[in-house]
Amino acid sequence: MTAVLSTVNRVLLGLAGLVLICGGGAVLAAGLGLSVPSWWPWGGRTDVLLSQADRDRWRADGWWWPTVIVVLAVLFVLALWWFLAQLRRARLAEVLVESGDGEGALLRGRALEGVLAGEAGTLDGVARAQVMLVGRRTSPHARIRLLMEPHAAPGEALGRLTDEALAHARDSAGLAQLPAEVRLRAVKHRAERVS
Image (tube, rainbow, N blue to C red; front, side, top):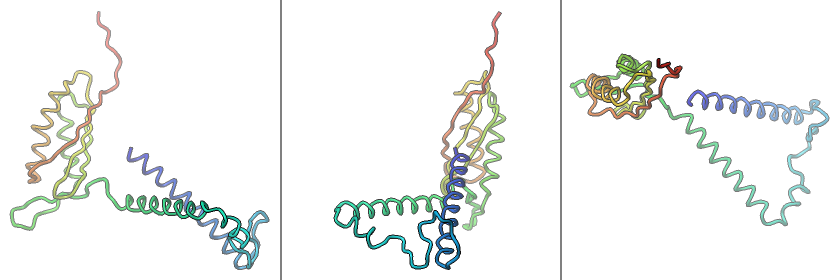
């Protein structure tokens, strides 16, 4: 899901940038008196975006300017929300480990994810494990995806994950708790014939 959002984000950024560069370049060219395509609506230095007649045409309608203001306000709020979403990190970069001296030490989030995924992947019935840490560096949360083999007992694997892998990660990082959201998915396989 994150890869899809990242791709959509890049495509939208590219399209917005292309429109702004082309439009701004054409306006700049027309303003400097350079030649612009014949279909371009503003071809001279004295042309304006909205003429006096265009501005006066909608003045009599009471709904026009409030609608324009509301649409622009919604676009501004959406753009601000999108910008702030870019600043938020989905994955935790580091975890603060209590070292006992009052200072603490920083542990790379990817390192803890790798160790947790490795230990979870060795559990009986688990074909593959993926781990992502989210939250704050003082109170991380684990998002774990387990790909289960056909013979696996999900309840047993979940119990061992909690009692072993998560407990080891929590204790080694010196965390009071390490909440986890675990998603289980079965490996696709062919049905076995019974004779």
